[in-house]
Image (cartoon, rainbow, N blue to C red):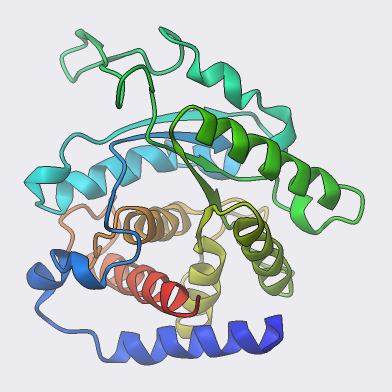
Length: 279
C-alpha cells in the first residue's frame, strides 16, 4: 500500500471509529490492554523541538494537566521538561548535553514556588523518554531531509545510550498546504522504523480533525502554528500514543468548550489506536 492510500485508509478508520465511541469513558481510559504503547509509560519526558511545542504555554504542560485530569493515581509522577529553540531543526539541539547529571530537569518549582530537586528517572538517568520534533518542513525539504535522517539516527543512539526511549513527534501540515500531511507522515514513519523510535501521529490527528470539522480552526493566522485547540489536540494525541491513556472524558479542557474538547479527545484517541493498528 502506498503512502497516500495508507493515510486515506487510516483517516477512514479514525472517522469510523469516532462515530462508534463507547460512552463508558471511565472504563476505556483504564483499558491499558488495548492502548498503544501503554506497557511502559514514561514518567520523565524531555521535549526537544521548536515553537510548535512552546505555543500556548507549552504542549508539555497541557500533557501534564491531561495526565492529572485522567484520574489515574498511578500516573501522577509525570514530569516534563521542554527544550525548544525558535525555528529550530532537530540538528540544532545538543541532546546529549541534556543528560548531564545535575543539569537539565534536575530541579523545578512547586505551586508554592518551593524548589524541588528531582530524582533521576532510574539510576542517573534524568529522563525515561525523549520526544523529538524537527522543524515544520525539514523532513520533506529537499536540502534538509538528509539532515533530518542524520539527526534522528544520531539522537536516537544518544537517547538509548543513556537508557531512555526515543520518540518522534509527527508534526502537522500548514493549513494552506494539506499535501504536507502525507509527505511528513511518510518521512516520520520511515525514520521511526529505521531507528526503532515510536512515532506520535499528531499530524494525522490534525488531518482527521479538519476532515470531520473543518470549521474548527487548529491554527493561528500564520497558518502554521497551533491555536489552543491545535495544541490541545496534539497534547491529547501524545497522551494517547505515549502514555496509552484515552483522553475521552478527561476533566482537563484547557479552557475550550466541553463540546470542542470532547471532539478533539475522540479524534486523538481514535487516531492513536488506528495508527498503532496499522503497523
